Length: 330
Image (tube, rainbow, N blue to C red; front, side, top):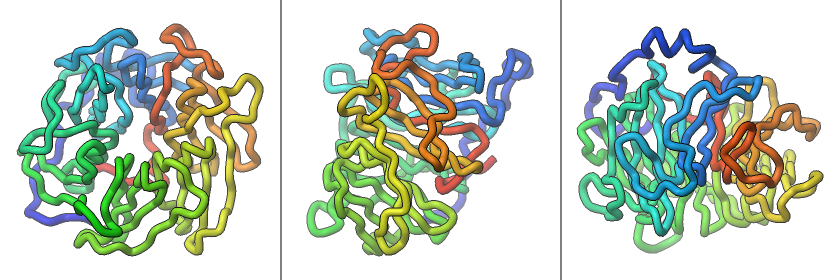
């Protein structure tokens, strides 16, 4: 695994209060954690469609990032003890520029970046779109506006950085970075419309770009295939190690679909289904290998913040499942 300095304590601060567990399903395996981007919230929903946890106001008119708010979150994952790692991306008019860890009660326990401040200096980010916790508790951040990937520890020290200014490895608005089992980093290089695999030393191992258009997310599956949210082509694509298409699911052909939903998140589940954040269709869907929708949260192409409504969900993950993605210390 990626590791360039001595170990530091993991970002584990508080266990889940008993009251939270008694509330009816918080942090239950099978729940889905969704970044409800333009509702300025992260929500956890159960299989019945009930919201069992929320961070952020849910108000699309919120514009100021603060202690209990997040503006236009693009990514979230559940950590040990019921804590949640969130990338507060913000928008052009309402910046956030923070990666935070919040506990089940909504208290921020860790923060890298400063609310409303864009930069590349110490404790500064510029449109952070994705963050994961590695096996040592450090946080790998996709700092899109700075065209870099950085690894920071809980002391807010940058341990590693990748983002050459030029050459074939230069990034253009990267949108995600996963740590592979061999320690390499898999990057969805969005505006270069490619999936890039590099070593921890920054050497390019592989590049896949054929037919892609605005790559929002990529993960390496256990069998060696790569799952890609090919947003500009409105599809989720699986390719093998030779770059051949294994499967493709297009999200803009169903009844009532937005012509360009730009799906931005796609993760494989243990049962073989794929969980997709179908962004501008305002829904999260679970799709079987045969291409059937077996679960949906959000109403197709209807934006809102009421019951069963989302507003441009950017990512969705199932709690307790880490197929093909970096598993945090649990």
